[in-house]
Each structure stands twice: as structure tokens, then as C-alpha cells.
Amino acid sequence: MDIKKTCATLAHPIGIDKFLHFSTWYSFVRGVVFFKRFCRSYRSVKTQSLISVDSYINAGNFIIRSVQSEVYRVEIDCLQQNEPVPKCIQIDKLNPFLYEQGILRVGGRIVNSNLNFKEKKPIIVRGRYHIAMLLVRHYHGKIRHHGRHFTDGAVRSAGFWIVGAKHLVSLFIHKCVIGRKLRGKTECQIVSDILEDRL
Image (cartoon, rainbow, N blue to C red; front, top):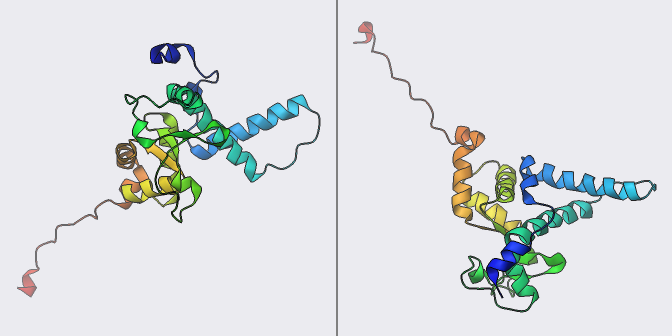
């Protein structure tokens, strides 16, 4: 298969450059949920029910699938045709595979562990894209702005494998204003001279 030709001819119609307008993961998912709800209401005049948790889950999967279809187009094509992922690809060592809804996940040897499925087979996210920064920001806030190890662990526990996560998390924590304030050093004031009477 001609990798260069595949990259040039296949592209996702949505365009992940539009995702740059969102500053948080929650607002991103919520925006997709309401957009889908608007599309359904436009097609039908039926009264819309309350938004369910499944709607948010499906919206998150839609975002991940859209990004992967544009970033990992070659890898997905290889897996769909039951061909091995080229070794020149960065994620070939992760033993990727396609799961439900066409989402690319990490393969591994911990299937028999007591972890849940999303931790055993996390979703692959490329660290150089805006969505990876949104995920890091989201879970860094959830753990109350702790350090890199806690943030990285929170992202992994949520079922995401960010390629180049250590560098991305360290870069984000360095720029996090709230985190820098919490980890900042206390001021040390110079003590004044001792009074003459005490000497």
C-alpha cells in the first residue's frame, strides 16, 4: 500500500482545525452534544428529551474518532485491511487495534488483570494536537492541580494513552498559573536588627 498516496487522498471532512475554538474538554463535549441535538431537532419536530449521560459519552467518542481518522489515517486503513501497521509509524510498538465505533486503542498483555477495560486498552491520542492539551487540562483540574505523576495517572485511569504524555504534562504544569501558585515558595523576610535594650 502506498502510504504517501493514502495520506494525500484520504482526509476527514470535519477538519480538526475547528476544534481549536474550544478551551476545555467539557465545553467541547457539551458543544458536540448540543450540535447533534440541534441536528436531530431540525430533522424532526418531536420534543427533545433531557440530555442523557450516554449522549456525552457518544459525543466524546465522536471527537476521538474524528481526530484519529485524520491523524492516524494510515494506521486505521492498515488495520481495516488486516495488514500490519508499518514499523516506521510512531505507534506501531503500541500494538494498536480498532474497537467499537472504529476507535483506535492500545493493545497489551494485561488482559487478565483486574483493571477495567478502558485502563487495559486505553484510547490513543497524539500529544501534538489540541485535544491532548484539553484532556490534560481537564484531568489536571480534577486532581486539584497536583504534579506530573498524578496528572499522568489521572489521564491513564480515564482511559487515554497520550503519545508523548510526559513532555506534554510537564509543559502544561509549568504554564499552569494555579499550580504555580500552590507550589510556590513562601516569602522569607529578613529579620530586623535586635533592639539595643535587649543587648
